[in-house]
Image (tube, rainbow, N blue to C red; front, side, top):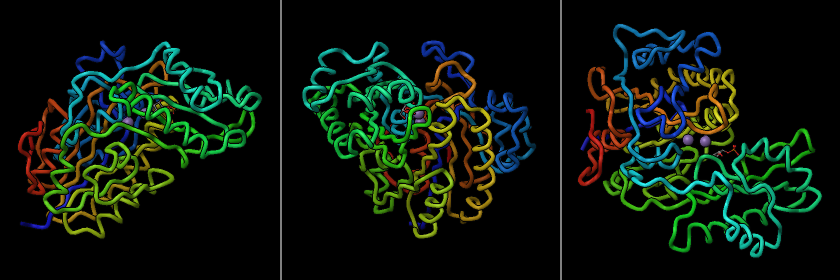
Length: 389
Ligand SMILES: O=P(O)(O)O[C@H]1O[C@H](CO)[C@@H](O)[C@H]1O
Ligand SMILES: [Mn+2]
Ligand SMILES: [Mn+2]
């Protein structure tokens, strides 16, 4: 078998326009890329433009090009979710047919009182919120009373925020493990993830300790393309939060790539430089966490431009037997109401594996895993998705 590599880069939350079922999610009109571009008076993305980003959708500042250097298209998500886990799982062949439970009214009383009993602290909050807003609002009360700040979002998440000067980090982690056991570990999946959200500082200028955030998720309930590539004897390198999303399954090496997207790209390049064959699966989370949820179109635009600036380096690291796929896991339109993800199609650019051509609108994100597995010569039997190569 040839020595081949595939690199999948996920621009977290960078959607490319409303999905056909966006209305069911309350997300009609969402378009992370196009609305960001319009909000800042046009994006400057010369490298993505050259690849064909402007051929995928109408994008201010990024016109279509006559002969794109990448194959280009859109993907529609089949899973009943607009979340990171569902998006990444689907890319690797696991479709969530049923949505995971969400808590628009907060968590039921029995969950909260059991969490209070098991951890010995009271709960305040218990509603959907933006993490930065709720600590500003409830931080002073937490400092006074030592209560947990529990909140959720449009996602299936149980998030616990704790001021580390009041509640030691280890105690927060222990509490999240208890919540994880209670909400996921007893046979019923009540949330997709429990998330520890430590922060510090003074009222009015609290700062989240993103490097100490910890996610406690669900395990993949079936085989993925990651398992298939690993079983074929190749390396599977996870960069950023990918390792947590798959609970480490099918992953041979984990590069956290802290603290930002630039460091994650460094990690991806390092992985490429040190491996002969296999898959690098990288998630760039700043688009989502720092700009999408914060509804910051300027920040989103700048992060896109920063990524664009690193593209030549990434392309330069690829050889003839390498494949690069750039895509996203859901939308997170920084111009949209609220602070949650948006149900969108995602952009698809694919470099390598033949002459650039239109890839159309793919019916499932699983085409990513199918294509990577096909390229690498791994077994694809029984998993959803069609290879475009
Ligand atoms: O507002 P913050 O705390 O960043 O939380 C966001 O991050 C969560 C998980 O990535 C999302 O569900 C959303 O709630
Ligand atoms: Mn995401
Ligand atoms: Mn998010």
